[in-house]
Length: 329
Image (cartoon, rainbow, N blue to C red; front, side, top):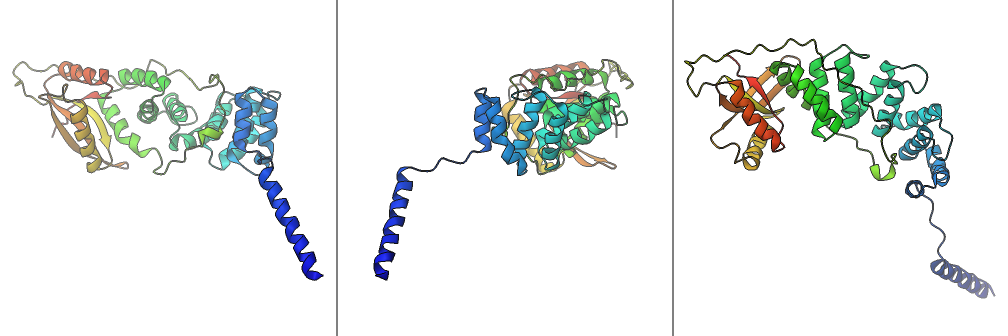
């Protein structure tokens, strides 16, 4: 009798398992389901999908809810609620949330403009490699907003953003290049590699929503005027030999000699046609308080004009560079 009961239970379990295989239970909703709903314009469903994950502390769900409230998609626009969601995600290290939180404070979306709060979050995102935050931080250093004005740091941060292909940063960098001395630009190139963290924390962008156009992309204008002293151009004496090493074209600054050597080899391969007859040098610079740097330079040039012509050719080919005076021993 007992054997028959066990047999019936076993048959029942097998039957249930078979039905489960034939008719699988609906898959649990995920953050990605909310992203899909957002992409097809079902913002209310996206909001509902993300709420339980946000309650569990999921960074992307928190960020996405902040986006909905910032943009007023499926919910009434509410910058205070957006701040709340961004803050929870930002405190967990979500770079996009750190950036957006900073811009809320920078542009005064929640009460008065608060540059101090803005900088505290933007610098975190900038150090984690976010180009928009790098542009903002550089702009704040240039304008002296919440920090002491520092054109060199401004140039360094903005050059990092430009190096990631951010168009606004590329335009700002061109303005700065025309307003700063070659020595300041050299300092900037030495500083830039030290600004970001060694272990970046990229967001999972596949689970993040963005507006169709970044209507709140931070674009503070870089003033065309600067207090930096203009560099005095020295005329080259007509008696200087053709091979005089008075100016150089600097194409990079690196924290290790190995990295500089690799960059030199890569440059020679990519720009062989332009660099025919041009020598490359790696110079050593020990900057107090900042460390040791290895500068990749092209030389020699007897005047700024000839160095500038080569640099322009490299820029046209997609290689960043600028002209510097040769250090005097």
